Image (cartoon, rainbow, N blue to C red):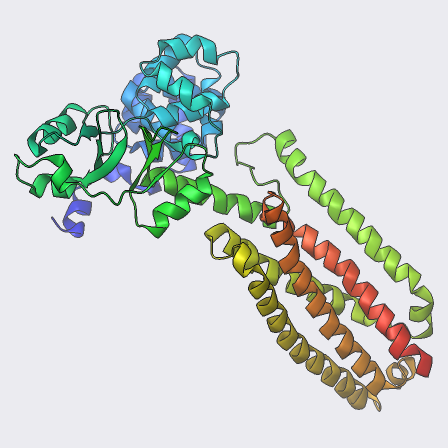
Length: 478
């Protein structure tokens, strides 16, 4: 069936256009009056993903009412589409006895993620009632940002001495519990991972063939303590849709699927972008004002302190500005170029560290390359600045004589400004490269080096360089 044909027979109500404030308002009205039948009829044909989006347009108490009214399977699908923090927030108002049916419909990793975000006093009451309580309890022990924290314990594994027919029957038996089956893992008698068979190869192989003869042995795997970013890099590098997780004895304990990897990629990208903007990196639209303020205020305070230090630098050179007031006009240029050059270099390095393209062996080479790029850019900017200064004073000599009197020796001023800009861009780039690398070596997220931190530090350094060079190269000759 073509894409056009399949899209034409989809229910009209699944269109995202239906999920708008008016639709949400109508749903809230039904829930407010207790007319659950009308509420359910209104959302009956909506996809769970659209229902999840719709919930964000509704007050929390009505979201909880809707979740409790939905069929259990649909409610679980909606839970899976939400962020874990939001799911835990909504479920906080649900009686513990009603939580188990919802969580039982989720895969073990999703259920563990939600429970991990809930109040610790609720978990002991809910966990024993879950069908996979032991598996979920084990998942809760892993760090949330490791392979163990994102893996699911549902998978299909068969002994190597089984036939293809037996393995196919095992897939059928697990079809209800394993939501997405991409590969079948092959294990030995002790449960140790030895290979895998893709679903396609399983279907195309003779039913009497042994798994050990049709399986691939070049299997990739990780241990549960591996960071989730490394897990994603491995899956991207080898084009994997399912990655095995093994314990110290090489026994299969779980798998990370492509949908988990996509979630990690999105979360890490959002986190890095927020840190670039001066936010802690874990802010969600559903967070409270207090939580959002707590995440933003420290960086704003850091920026204010940096601005105060930059102002102090200007104060130190107050006498120079008083003697030649035109120097003050270069302050915004120097600060802007320093901040921009630093952000450009740091962003490239942070991106390289996140993707695995930058590592210890090539750090010096990357540093040298960025410095050379900064040198070329610095020369170009310096020449442009010098030319602008000279042209402005030449053109303005007859029109704005006061400007020329305020800045004697325009050629020397142009040379000083150009040289200052070159040095500032060079230093800013070096700092923008070095700080993320140092933080990475120290085990700190290098994304913290971007945004306000780099901008503020380079503003201060840029002003010091400019006024120092002006004091040494320009003012003594007036």
